[in-house]
Length: 116
Image (cartoon, rainbow, N blue to C red; front, side, top):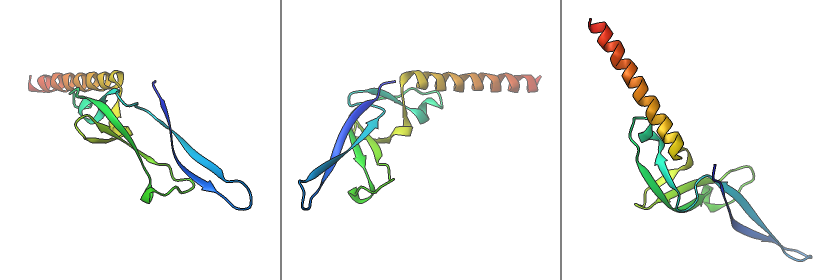
């Protein structure tokens, strides 16, 4: 699997000592430029691919809270916004599509058997 590493966000702590800068690191599943597929369409037998143009990291009111994980939003080349669980790699999309068509073929076979 292809994971990317992005570091963003910073704040500094100060006082009587020298300032300390802390950064937050997070992992994303799909990098910019990745060709991914829409999972919901793959589940109904359609393979629709998109290209990731931008990765946004959103948090509640853009404030970092302890224990609150940021939401990763992927922007595609047509400016559509996608969450990570709405996208998948090609292998998973093919598997979901094949499963759909196998279930459809089984349903049709059962339907024909009932008509006899």
